[in-house]
Length: 332
Ligand code: 2P0
Image 1 (tube, helix red, strand yellow):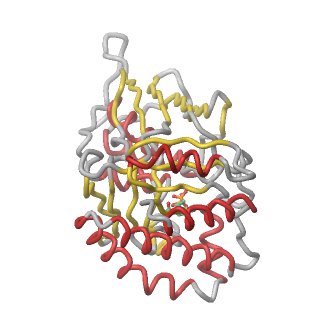
Image 2: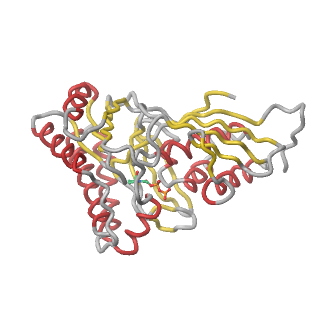
Image 3: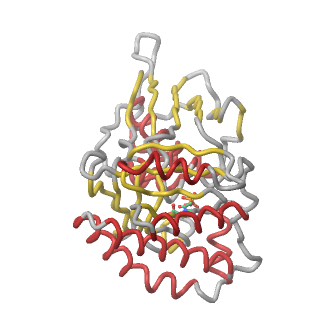
């Protein structure tokens, strides 16, 4: 089927917002590179304080897809953007190209999961523009083609992503209202990271002697973490999430060449969070492929945590927010 489009037709356009997410039990490494299937499942929180807004319009006058990221035109004719756009076109039966404009309200490519919110917003806007049902489960796999962490940003609150046969399943396990948690994003550098997650995790799979142990112990971490979330056991989740994060960074550090994403301020913030928790505050750290620290805390102590971490030498600024909602259409 080809979508008929003439001047009488409704414009095929939509605007969507998606938030980045941060994994408490992380994904690092692929089971299959070509389909971008993760080697391990993951559990994330959606970050309400940061957002990507993406506007998409399929246009019969275009001869290829056009992408503007933060106002700057990007190559769009190949790679993962093209793969996502082609998958959306296949699903809808439309063969028109699109103009895509995407803006982040936070640093891009600096370990703040801009690709997750970017692809979640793209898929949500693209599906709406093409009349694809937002509950179509194949959208999860289309988002994953763009970025392995993007399906998690389709949902809000806390989200579980797992492999399932040739695809992935992704579901919300609690809503933002179910548990009053906040995330303090502690920014220690605004410079894009030197090695992308995509390249780094493949180097880890090929060269870290700890990679097999990471994969082998992961299912237990994920199962236990889901249990702690269901029990709302913050301190048990805190210990396990920090362990899983440090295990991933052990794999990164033992990759050849090594992936050392931390700066001195990253480590200083980790120590400060340890002191705060030892003093009884419900807070823990997690760190992704970049130098920023995300401090997950109970919302009632978010101001205290933000003040303490903002005062650590080397910290540039902090952004605090509660758990966010899933990707959604905000305009046509
Ligand atoms: C995560 N990260 O679970 C982990 C922790 C970074 C560290 O998912 O190759 O940008 O596009 O699937 O999704 C970042 O990896 O990589 C990521 P691709 P993606 O959040």
